Length: 65
Length: 462
Image 1 (cartoon, rainbow over the protein chains, first blue to last red):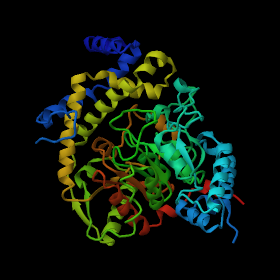
Image 2 (image 1 turned 45 degrees about the vertical axis):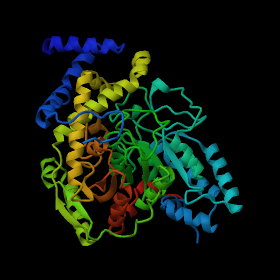
Image 3 (image 1 turned 45 degrees about the horizontal axis):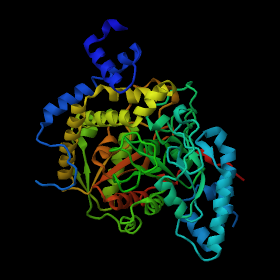
Image 4 (image 1 turned 90 degrees about the horizontal axis):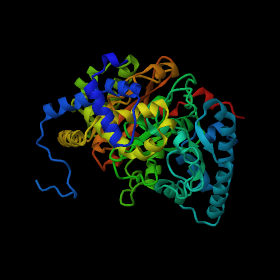
């Protein structure tokens, strides 16, 4: 199973999980990375395509534009 | 005239309410009819996580006493309902079909449970669901099995509000509540042939409802008719927005319905779904609505933002349980949550910014049309075997958008396939215009007969 994995990304994922107090098995990591194409990679593409003119929501609902 | 349990329990709650108001039937009689059906059909369908017959009998007796005294609370007084098993009920187990919460008994009602109780409804029980309202459910994990679709018991009824849809479709409850984070009310409504509304975000309280993703979670009704859906909304919605039944019969002449033709054409639709959708559009034209071609945001962008937000919020909501009880999670829920670990904080913010871009884009579309119509699901209900083999994060391309926007969206029955399995039509409106969505759906319903079909398994009482 480890042969096809991006080991750097796998380790990053383990670190992220540890920060949340979770320990991931090799199987968990392999499954999560399989989902990257449909999730994180797509998010990166969407961010590029749609631009970043928007700011995230602030603490009130007032639209100052 | 003698009414069978079938006739009574499959009737709209609006009709049941008239019978109660006129004294033709009492709440205890109606409740007993439902309890007999639950006893007969529940072993076949498995839609209750926990039936509460004693509570139902007590509620119905209290309703009868109040109504006899002339203190009828409203149209839902004495109407038997069920609640998805992630909606807290004081003193009654609420376990979200997970071993993590196997012994959980809340001390307080969720706000929606409280409001239905105040409206005088009768609680029949808690309804089954996929674990923690995640969409996928595998067999053989020690979790309660998924309810069977009453139209074909070897088929999945849709999730995550599976029991809520099955109970209403089979006449085991007058109405039910479900939750919808990415289609979890509308998908089972479509697969099971009932009406399901995801209201505007914030219009119906989620307080006391076990969360999956806070900014996407909604609670809403599943019913046999649109009018019933409006009646339930008037009981559970914010007090300033209880006008859902007022304009149901006004018609929709001149109302503009957007159809994202290019997007729909790009989806691999089952032929019967496509033809039913096209027939639905013709019906809208026939009742005076104007169809207008619209362009929706790219599905890939919608899905990217949805998965990041749902994933990150899901991990946040579940973090304490994951730390203490990871070993108790079933595979379906864990697969749904683990993808949330992939995102950094910056990426979550990126996803929210994309959400903002998408919201403004659709808001511009909603300047030209009042409602947008799409099929609810690309196909009819899969077999359980097909559901098991589907990808780990199966998504309808048509449902997530309304959750990202916080917009109201309803699924109404609009056809059936060669096997007689139901097909749903999804109508999405502007935020806080839930009443318009209901009016469009009610007009469609009056022009069709689909809501009058019931699964064969639902018949057979004396």
